[in-house]
Length: 431
Image 1: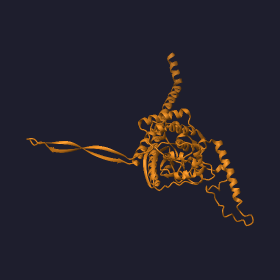
Image 2: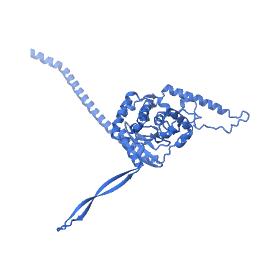
Image 3: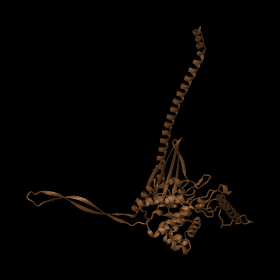
Image 4: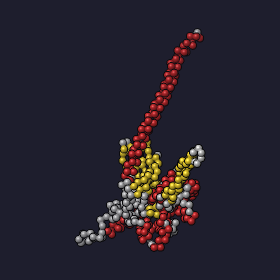
């Protein structure tokens, strides 16, 4: 009787057991299916990323060749920007400051436009011959300051030399930017090993750092990093041709006066003298410091932290620092903090920087003599002291190339010197 009862219970529980086993099997199959499909998706993603990166890298390498070829024909021309807001103080302005600057310029612009309309003869309707249809800045067609873009020394926003170029190579989208490195603070200035200029070096360095928004901790950290680099090699500002002497041993066979008539070889040194020109020394120093400034010796990440973010505009200290071993700043393209840091070596840096900013908006300086003539004679001594730190033409530029394809991107940063049509590469950093 008990045995029959047990068989009856088993037969009743059989559907439940089958259902449980079926559920377990379904869970195992679903897990296996998910794992398998996830691995396939991951593999596809990796394969697609490799394809995208290959396309992006190829596009970037092709863009490098294109950019270097076009740089030979590039002739950067400064634009006249009379009565426009100057790019020089944008680093210190937030959204409110920008709007106040543009509003002030808009009021002045509308006032000039109203005065210009009075040049018309009320009776004849003929415009006065002394008036012009457009002002020098070419901005008469702008209505309302919301549409105004504050131009840099070359027209595009500072520090661009030309408007960024965008195009496609296959599936890769390319963007090329060219920046004026002589418009930035040469970091090598803080490394000059000249006891007579030690106080000016420190004052110029601190003045620049404070003006671009660096705090005391950042300034102290950068100072320590530069000290380590300075211990490796000091930064020179002026050069003279040097002569190097080298000795090259030349084997000479001589016969020894003996009964055996044997001979022996004597190493006679040959002395050669070679002259290293100034241009070669400058090029070597620029390359040397370009490598060190872009190494782990400088913490560039902290210098890239934005101090001001207004729409698409980001202001951060590294934007104003030259990391390619430049020696001079272009007074026609440098912003106020760089100008003050340069002229602190001669004094009156605040007044001279203000005068330069006002004068260059009307017309760029042709040379240093032009600077001396246009500025008050009381600054001539200060300007003379700073001549080796300043120039009126830029010859060092940075080419930044970004290439994106799908989810991958590749980049190249190239530092070049340009003398006429001759373009020389200093260094290339690929990312």
